Length: 157
Image (cartoon, rainbow, N blue to C red; front, side, top):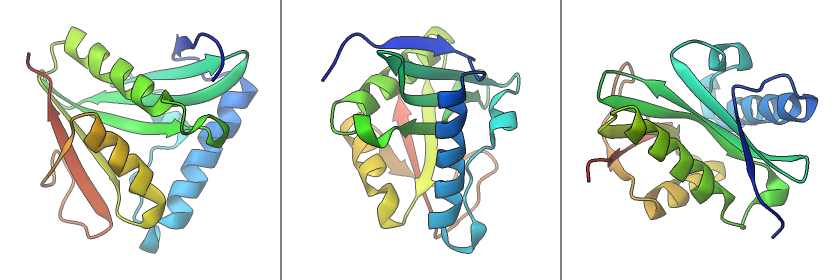
């Protein structure tokens, strides 16, 4: 499984991270019918309303995830991804736990996320369910979309 995981906030300059971000963006768009993917491009992840972390082990990028504030008490998980070579090692749970903990520190009471409905996203949906997220209706600016699964988690103690 490997050594300790290093967490970096807002570090977009590392070439390995840029490669994984491009892969996430391109693949999400390719597997989602009708170009209906809600994945953020790299430049959007740099915006002030996003907190973004990358996760590293032994100089290899493990994955990444972001948090977009929707209101003073609500936020959304954005662009979460685990590199294929690190899947099945609990890294998704570690990334999501970090995002949820950061949200709680910011006073967020409810976390939301949107993910795809195609089979490619099934492992992600299972991860979110294991971590306490439940299906809900559209939130924020999302509308009813057969290509989207919406989920939420109450972060209040």
